[in-house]
Length: 397
Image (cartoon, helix red, strand yellow):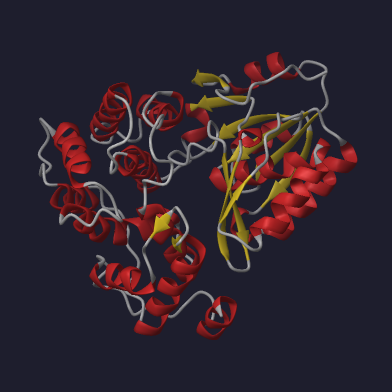
C-alpha cells in the first residue's frame, strides 16, 4: 500500500552511483514500471529490472500521454519510475494521474486543449512517482508542474498531485549530457529565481535564498563542466530552486519571459532555453524602463546586483544577462520572418496575455515589439521551419 504523501517536498537522494541501491530500497516488493527516454544510457540497466516503456521525447505529445495513462490505468503500477529529461518526467507525472484518478486526468486533458494554464483540483497523488533526471534545469523532479504538448502549443499543468514522491539525482546519469546542455540547464535554473525576483512580493528569506542560489549557479558554471561533482552541484541547485524558500510567497506568474519563450519554442521547434536566450533581455529591458506589466524594476535590479557582485558580469540586468548568454555560448534561434513573429505574438496573447494573470494587460502588439527587439542569431537564415504558417494562423483564429 502506498504511504500518504502531502505532495509538497519529495524525498530526495543525491550522489554518485546511487540509483540502483536507492531504487531497491524504495520499491522493495512493490510493482513498478519504468518510463524512460529511449536515447538515455541510464535507462538500459533499469529496463532489465522492471517493466519498461521507452519513449522518444521529440515525438512526445498529448496523444502519447493519453496512451501512457491508459496503460497505467490498465496495469495499475504502484510505482512509476521516470528516467529522462523534463519532457519524459512531465509525461510520466501527468499520465500517472490516470492510474487511479481517471476523473482528474480527463479534466486535465479536456481543459488543456482549450487553455494555456490548467490548475488541477485538490487531491493527493495515489501512485508514487520516482523521478530520475538525466538533464538539469527543468526541476521537474521536484516541482508540481507539467508541460503538455498539444496541437495549439505547450500547455502548463499545475497541481500538487503532479509532484513526484521521490527524486534521485545521480551524477552517473548526467554524464552523457553535453556541456552546452549543462550550461543551458544552469541558465534555466538561474532564470527561474531571477524571473520570480522581478516582482516585489515575497519575504526576506525568499530573497536571500534566490540570491544565494543564483550566485552558486553562476559560480558552478565556471567550474569544470565535465566533472561529476560540477554536474551534481548544478543539478542540486536546480532542485533547490523548488526545495528552498526562493519561490515561496511570490507571484507565481512573475517569470514572464517563460510565457513568451514557450510560444517561440513551439512555433520555431527549438528548445525552450534556445528561445529564452533570444527574448529574455528584451523583456528585462521593458522591466528596467519601468513597464510594470513585465515586472518591477527595483526588484530585478536589486536581485541582479546581489547575484553578480564579485563577478565580471555587469550589475545592469540587461547588459549582464546578455554578457552571460555570450560567455556561456548559449544558442539562439535565427530571426523569424515578420509573418511568423505576428503568429507567435498572437498565440502568446491568446494563451497567456490580455486578461489572463500570466501576462495581464499584455497584447499581441506588446509581444511583437519584444520579438522585434530580441537577440536572434545573426548568422542564421530567416526561420521558416517548424509548423506551416497557414497551420499556425488557422489554429489561432
